[in-house]
Image (cartoon, rainbow over all chains, first blue to last red; front, side):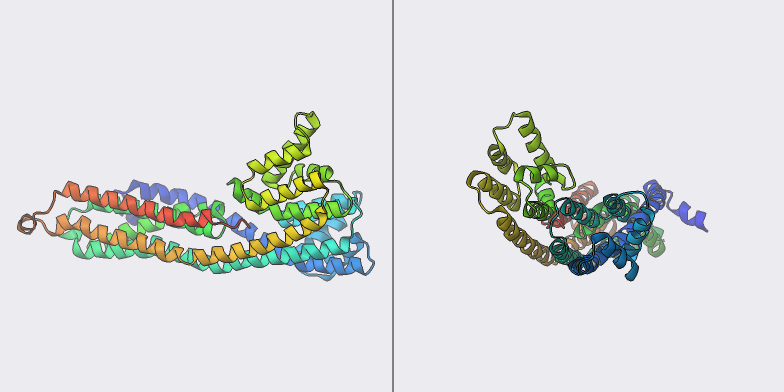
Length: 243
Length: 193
């Protein structure tokens, strides 16, 4: 059955090539999604964590002691990573542990915070105020990032669904109903033109959607899949409706 | 691209300079710290300033800052460089100004994100209008030679099918360009979070 379906698209080798490429690219597209989810969960925990650290330091605890306490009393990935790093750091300095922790999180927000904390420690600055300011800064930043994500992801998906799924199926129905190949209409070149257009339009839609959400590079992995879907849906629906 | 990079890093640079200078670090040392890396394009700029100062090829920090102001593209970065320049030439209260600039930058960023979300609200509708109406009309135009062949075609004096195909192809290309241009708004208006 699978070979039968594939053979029905023999006239469109580009669709078959794109199908193979898209399967390979899906493998590349999943890890950035998982990584992003992990990074954002760490970044969303950061403001609360910094606020708690600020309170502990204000109560007279040393930064290392405060970090250890917070990592033990809090749940979540950020606390567990910090606890793990501090426990592993037997023979290294506290600054080295902070750098190792920042690297483990793979988050630019955490790395910036740790860099600033290290600088503040070197300069003997008031950690309480700095931590409290950082907590406020990153809370606002994360609120903005989350707001952008929630408000624009729906619109981005809407563009992809309409351009890559809705439009090809709609036009395939028009073509299949008014000019069915089974009744002798010569629509091979017409179908090729339109299937190429749908592939290109899907690429534009995926690109725009990815840019709207601020993660174009991650979305590019899914580009061949959506191109294949739109081409396949169009050619498949034309065959199904018009024969 | 440069303006976007500047916008993305500026607030972090201001906060770091604030921390450093509140702790008594001098302006040159603060610029040197930022120039060591971690702040994208601004680190590159500051590193170039320090290299030229160390070589003695620059005409002093004030002139270097003035030169960098001409290179800067975003208003916020120009403002920061101007603040640093004023501090070097007139010994102003830099820490206080940095704090104010940080707060202002943060407010501007929040406003920019809200404006971006609001402006992009119309993008799906416009993009779908162009991307859907165009191909639907063009598909019907492309089918006309098939549907109106024979006597009906001769009666209607339809153009040659190759002309119709060219019109359809051109129309589809224009539709794609239109979609891309509408989508470009998502890139050019990015607030740089």
